[in-house]
Image (tube, rainbow, N blue to C red; front, side, top):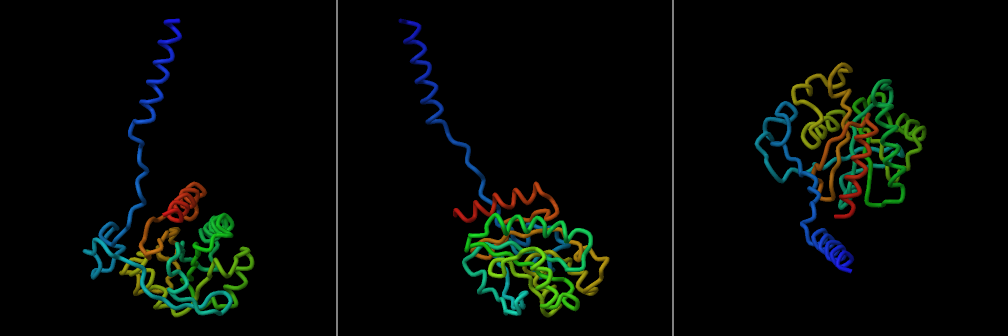
Length: 218
């Protein structure tokens, strides 16, 4: 009887300790500002900006020839990549992973995907349409964007920090790091950058999917 009572008391004590012990809190996703990044990726005029950075305005054509502006992602979470349709190296790997994201959130209206070209001379609306169809892209969710080259690169440099300012002098240089960036960028409903992910990595894309789910729950 004493043993049963002692065991019961130990069990109850263990349950109470587990219940009232402080729960490990999941760290919120960072809000990334220019000051948090390598200085070579940030335009000099933005280097000291430590808070308040938001993605700037834009206007490009998607694969349907429809003009897409910042209003498309107003109040929504979105994932961004830069690529070009004739790329034979990392871009196909990246868009296999982006397909996974699109399929995972197929019915989620609050998530958009923006795939911006770095080679608009070749990546016309018609070319983007062919590429989008080959990847099973839903044009209401996944926009393949083309347009003015200077505007595309400026957005990459000053909003997403995917282009070194020094490389803007050689726009379209197929050997530049920018052309071959493998980054996916996660942006929240307030147009703030919340993470960078290796778009060629299955594991990193899994992490991105989890982080998208976290933002959707906020």
